[in-house]
Image (cartoon, rainbow, N blue to C red; front, side):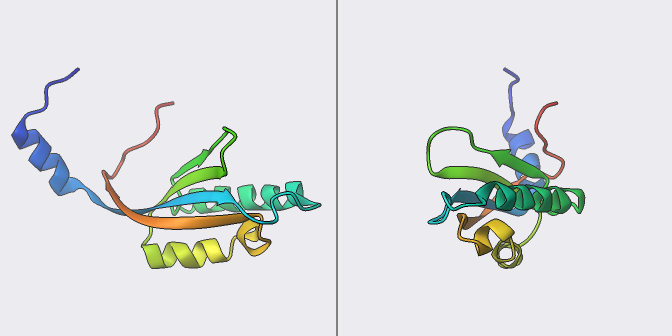
Length: 112
C-alpha cells in the first residue's frame, strides 16, 4: 500500500467537494404487474442522467436485500430529490429512496 503523508491528506481533503448519494430501495409496488417495463424506463432515465453528467456513478445492488441500487449524483440534495421524484419507478411506487449529502473527490471513477 502507498504511504500517505499528512500533507498529502490535507491537500486531497481540500480538493473534495459535495455530492449526493441515493440509496434506492424496493417500494410497496415492486411486485406489481408490468414492473419490468417500469424498471426498464427507470434504467433508461438513469443512462440519460449519466450522459448529462448528473449521475456519474450508478450501481445496481444484486443481493437479496431491499436495496435496489446506489447512485452518486453531481447535484445538490434538493436537486436530487426533484430528479428522483420524477423517476418513473418512484412515481409508480416500485422504488423508494433516501438522499444523503456526501463528499468525494472530483474525477473519481470505478476501475474499468
